[in-house]
Length: 191
Image 1 (cartoon, rainbow, N blue to C red):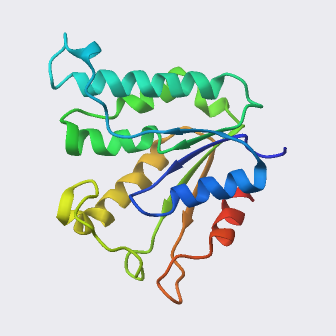
Image 2: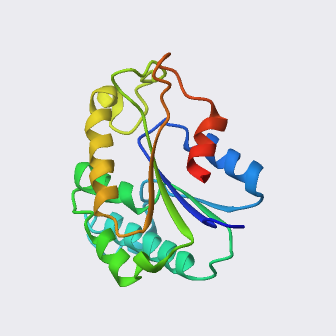
């Protein structure tokens, strides 16, 4: 396969990451999928403060991700969310800085990883007609008002990242305000 074997997919809620994963697998075959989410409360971290436990969990999870990414370049990996979200959501919702993820990038020399593509899915929030807030997304009922801010923070995080192969893909069809076809999004991600 020419091109990347590892994909890191980022973006705010409901921009089509799961659909894109299914498309990558349909087109390129099996990929191991890692789905990152908010930190779990584990007994293992009971010895540290309640404020430090989520940091310890997240730092361990992203350190493991970088170890996997640096492992076998021919392995096929997709991360549904990754470390960029931590740089955004840690200070907003967990009370600590998420900037350590960029230190991890440097520690693992990710600028050398030509087999990894990081993709930020964005929507044109001025034209978008597909998002309906259900009150259960990150941030609660007022999340719809925070989407632009979070998306801007993702763009800044992507700019800060030292990965070489970075893409921003808009999922919004400008004419209709609905999602672009999943095939056209997939084509853009894989080109």
